[in-house]
Image (cartoon, rainbow, N blue to C red; front, side, top):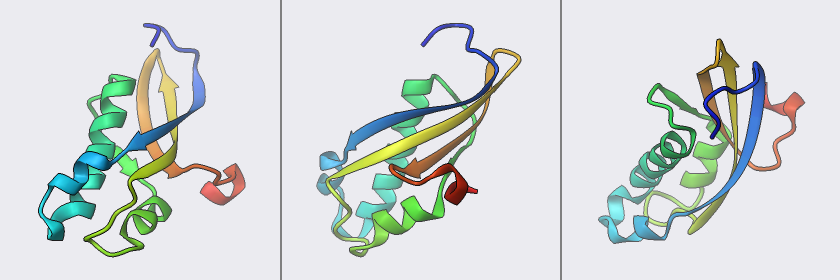
Length: 102
């Protein structure tokens, strides 16, 4: 990622493999999946602040209960750049339109 990003709102798409979540205890898998998504986004954006998970993504991860989260998740990561620094990060499921996101 370049050191200076243009000001404004940006979106990036990722496909995250959550296969490693299945090595966690059965009753903790969805919680671990959310933590892994936050770690992935923080690593790829080089961002250490708070990462907001959209409620629709949360519902997608918990849709098959705590024991069976999806093996792969397609995400859109929206972030805002102010003064050359990332100021706000939101993680959405892929395909959510901008008018629906707010």
